[in-house]
Length: 319
Ligand code: UVW
Image (cartoon, rainbow, N blue to C red):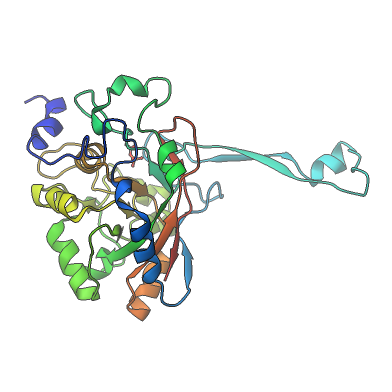
């Protein structure tokens, strides 16, 4: 079998949600998050504690990004120096101001992938032709997700803590059994339509040990690994969103087949599950371990980028 057939073969008998919400759908499993589901999320709020889950953009530390992308560049177009060195006149009343701009990969920070972001067999989410991605995504871009907003009950599964380590190792994988045993140990029930947030601890390596330790000789993130049972469970549990503290939400290379990012296709392309990536989960996870509350309200929406393949977000968790 040629390499480019591997994913198609692996996923041949796997479920899809194509056409479940009609031939024009562009938000996939976000359809599960109805007003009733938002209220279910609100009912999970117990203490009023707020956690923001976005990473800092454009700091001197740099930004953790998928290989081939680069971190944000942030530049001042005007600051105090302009008034000092160019003898600019302050506006009437004494006003001076600072301005800046940023160039960045739209997926170069905490972000949502558009549903059409990855594909195989020339078809993206809902069966749209992959040609619709040329020159900007005509179909299943990040914009419809941004217009809808993402709000619901979320459950954090702290896989690293469950395995008794500060972070998972390079390429370390876990599967459905681990999700279920972790939930049981944490005393939390994963309910239908829950937003699933998985902590591996992996992002800490970038910030605590630096990019060289994070990328290593060959980039291979830890994370969920494909199995038919896992995909069927996502389908049956009708999970709308998968969020993690890794760049790609799944182990980079599937250990069984050697294929790249299989779950991007099995879950995102085929089931319409939204991928929210590169979350900062350390503070939230420490708090959940301390008070035992692993279910909470999640609210986030990517920026409204026209025809974008993804867009930054700073999600908020309210416990
Ligand atoms: C790729 O774009 C390959 O991955 P991600 O969705 O994690 O950004």
